[in-house]
Amino acid sequence: MGTAASTAPRSFSEAPLSLVTASSDGQVRLLDLAADGAPTPIASLPGLTATASDSRFVALTGPNGTLSLADSGVWTWDHGDHQHYYRAAARDLGAVGMSGTAGVASTNARTVIASGTTATVLDRQALGQGRQSALTTATIDAGSFAAPQGERTVLVSGGQAGIIDDAGRAVGQGVACPAASGGALTRAGIVLGCQGGAVVAPEPSSSATAEPPSLEWVPLPDEAAGTKIVSLSNRARRSQVAALDESGGAWLLSVRDRSWTRVTFGAPVVAVSAMDDTHKRVVGIDAEGRVRVWADGAEATVTEPIANPGLAAASGLRVTPKRVYAPGADGASVLEIDAADSARVARTIPAAGLVSFEVVGA
Image (tube, rainbow, N blue to C red; front, top):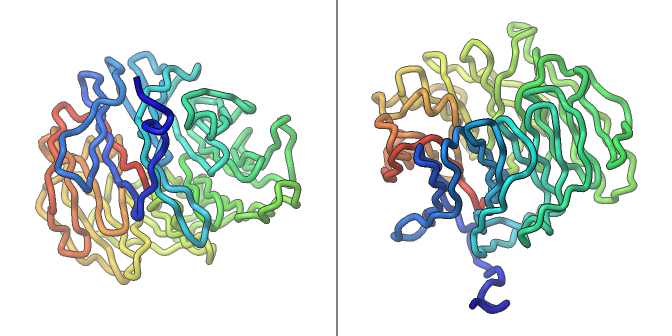
């Protein structure tokens, strides 16, 4: 029997980056990306169809849309100006009483799971101890993102982006967000994807009772007016966010500057993410499975077809400070790609029957 000391989180000097893979046999496995060991099973959900993560907790969608949660046991405690890194035992947290494809977003205190037309706010500290403690639930627009901000929740409901308290009361003024789809949590604020642009909820004062920030509408440039944003993706908490639009076009949103830049790939893409490095790299996968890297305002690299575009469209890409993770063309591996080195494949990680994957610990 383990002791409290043996199960207590261990601290690290660097982020304990790990890969979670979900396979067609329902097995969910965790691989330490800095070690040479084999992946460790952390959950099982036969018929699993999708995953989502906040970089620690992983939502698993089952064959009938039922949702379960797993704790990867690796995370970064973000203090803004510095971070602490931890690893603890991974565990299966069981069903969450929701259904559908999910989105997961967390602060140090709260985790929000958005699925279908419901957002559930959970106590993150309790979740880390293996207990699901719901603080509140809210109705949202199908497909929209929701995220915690202090002791409030940013979401889209009835075509309006807004901020609510735990009693469901609106706090501050809402902003129109038609056809909401996707979002991102960054240190500069929360981003909600909409038709024609995005709504930004700027990072507020640290005081829970402070006046909420004013939501801001950031429209796409005139050339793309009315274009629907399909998904948003960024490196964990970073304020450069990549957007995929309905025609396969890519955009880069600077959350701090409230400005969009068109990412001029040579072909439409099915998945995209932003690395937020000094070259403002954005990485995409096109319909043929080519990896495309955009840097310093131009397309810098195009590979041969090495990725699986179907899996990339379904699961997206994951980025860390130095690597991009994409599903391999064989549908049975995850590629670790060095985007700064002509999109060189640094490692091929076996993942038989791959359905989806997440990078956790960032």
